[in-house]
Length: 298
Ligand SMILES: [Zn+2]
Ligand SMILES: [Zn+2]
Ligand SMILES: [Zn+2]
Image (cartoon, rainbow, N blue to C red; front, side):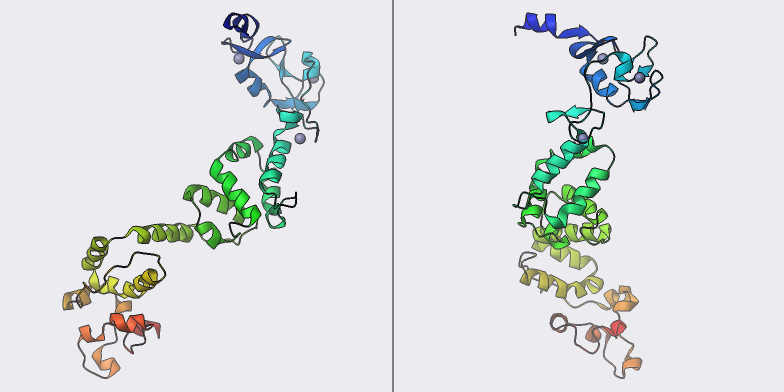
């Protein structure tokens, strides 16, 4: 079709918005642009002519929405599968039936059916309002990858399994949906976000960062050494030196919160100095077994 033919046959002044654009339909009130067509597919209510509660894509001369029968629109908008009257997509299927098809394809576990464990997610998504927004969500290649991975088993269907995946915003939303539908047990979202932040922070921490962090509040942060050693041992963070920190000074001790302090010399029966009673890295590394290491926990 040449540009001249396109202009002659397709471009019209829309009968509803007046915009000059390519027409999507030619109805009783005139040519309809794509925007007005999509808008008409959302108008529902009781038709003043037929008194039926249904889709009202047409317009009376006064502009009142009416059903296709009253408006004389020859095309019908009934889904070929479920009979719902509304916006139709490929194969003359409504948005909800199209969503069911798409989910069935993405969550196929290899048997031609949705993985049983993910069926509650499908049910939950199909029951939501605005299936169109779910179809748009499923266009995201990361969502497609995650759903396929969960269905095929390459991504474990657990909180830990999702913890390894990116991008985190997509994972967070998917995790919420899995929890809402009962596929995964509910956990505190703030804890999950903190765990993710911590994992990412530890993976990129450098020696200067670690030294600066410890120097700022050595007494309160020193107990984290046990955790940091474990992180290094399990490759959660690069191997860095913890030995650059000296023992905490008496002023550090004064700023230490009560639950980190050892009992007073009188209460534990000897006269060691505060620095002596502070758990040593070695003691912490062995599970804090020093008698003075964690008085508050006993
Ligand atoms: Zn229009
Ligand atoms: Zn009607
Ligand atoms: Zn349908």
